[in-house]
Image (tube, rainbow, N blue to C red):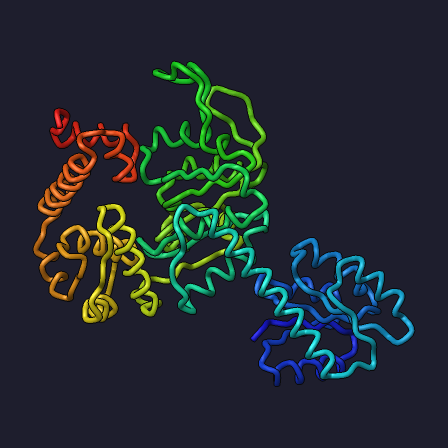
Length: 438
């Protein structure tokens, strides 16, 4: 099903097309002219069918306005017989196709189907390409996740702020990374700033920078995160935790593209901001903890990342992916998850979402002995406290290092190669485990 906008000043044409396309399974909205069409157009549109000759804003003007918003949105133009030359000009201007009135219903349905399919294919290719730019893949194919990924692909190229919402551990940072990787800023820097990790008195300097001598202890000038992200994307994690005083400066930066480091002059920056939070920002605004004007500035485009309980069909593939990742990290040749274990994982509530599942799989793999993990391992791992688990993981790591050193005849470089790590890292591990003399 696609979302289609029909634009025609003749009511019977709008009605006919709406009936036909609705019967074909599409969601249809209609406008009587170009100005109304621009008001109705949103980021969920898949295609537009517009008359070419309309009073006020005609089809060519509407085409130009729509392409400014989204150059990949297919626009099909309806033209009266004898106006084919104008229609060809429209094609050169970016129209996907044109159809001559009186039109054939089957021809319109077929042309529209091709347009929507081409758009979805381009979006999927762009998303796949963007995912390759991430430091880790986005795993899963549940409809709830697919909707978010599709929307992220649609809006990645929009030069507008994005607000990414979702519970803790859902993977908001991955979606933010996907937005950057799929945008025209992908070659620019991707900078992350955790608003909850910096004390209020340091947040101003961290975000916007400072000049040398701007305050006691400022022995050198520092470029803030905004300046570091110039030409790229700045991801503001836990935006709800940003102090109110700094929110005002952030609003100015978003509105004017200007920042003022402490003790320095105003600077121009070109930064796209993606904000992430697990909190309800509307409730934060109502409670006076978050600026309303900043909220509306950040929430021009919103994405909600689904919790794991809304995408349970992805749990088996996520669990397998995490198990293989940690098996490789711990030097295990293979790992196998028993069917009853997978069933138990699917049935769990996972309040910590994907992050909790990942931590669970890391624990299970670290405690496994023969590479096969059954459902009983869940109960066993639950009795292992954090300190106890850390000790077991460190003992497991020490054993792997000793084994690699024996196989390499004590040669540190060869042992590092066998462990798929650097010699420097291996030497650090030897020191950590008291194996310097080995």
